[in-house]
Length: 400
Image 1 (tube, helix red, strand yellow):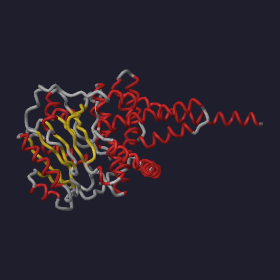
Image 2: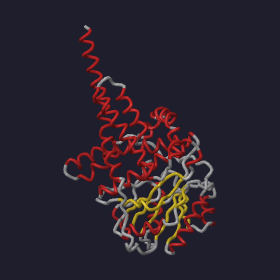
Image 3: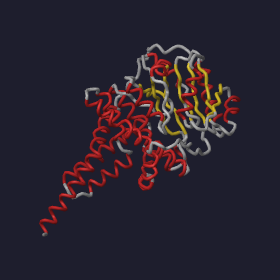
Image 4: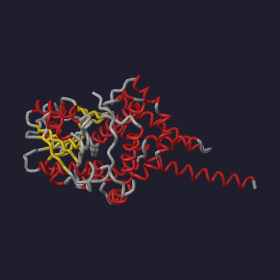
């Protein structure tokens, strides 16, 4: 009886270990590739001729009266230095003074009122449609809580002049010092929004669209109109670009910085939208990406791997679970995965310019954050439902 029970228990441990291995091994391998590739920086030649012609900076804004003046002031200064750029704010279903405040700072304002079609995707599609025919050669999307660096347009023009039809800049945290969570968010975005797109770009893959600080040429929008209305419209649109054979380049030389929510409700809304929306995209597009990848269209396998990669919090928990299984190969797999994860985070911190102090402060928030993420799992799954609607992230007081 003892031997039978031992064999049964060993079989259960093996099944559990195999399940955990299947859930983590693709992500571990994917992170390894992106981490090593991200050590290399690829930028256009210094003498690259920039794209000429007028550009529109489009700022989607829903009830952003608290911070829109700061953002528009920043972008108008950049546009004036460029000499051929217009700042356009889309006041989308606003019930406050967003439109008036944006006009007062020098922005062109489009007002949109449609309570049945709510969300950033609808606002951007409205802007691109309204501005079509105005002669703009490209559009740059900047969130209403964001400050851009002065070299934003010069860098984007150089990438677009090199032949890119879509470009994503670095996107990180403006208010990183405001709380332990925002410090951790800064580290996370160094990985998600800097190291990984840098690695994809170095490998010749599509860097991805991160929802803020990206540029699209008029040609790209003609080929792939911005018909993306899910709660993660940026990811949805990126998948459509890939389906049409377009690649997003990465502009590693400039950064946009946006405020991250500090209050628990704002963080929960944002994370549930990001992660639940990614799960929705996996459910909607995963089978098609796999099928096309297996038929020799290899460019579809990378976005599939990206969708399969769990958030690092969940990925690390599963790797730790492997260490609890009394099988030597499970221990080896778990330790190897944790080593890759540690390397990924350290390289991301280096790429993002985080020093030892900021890195240690970010790590201090990890235990509480892991527990919070596990408690949020139900909300995240709920947000992945096809019927999930866009919900604005609660913004705290903007920080300069």
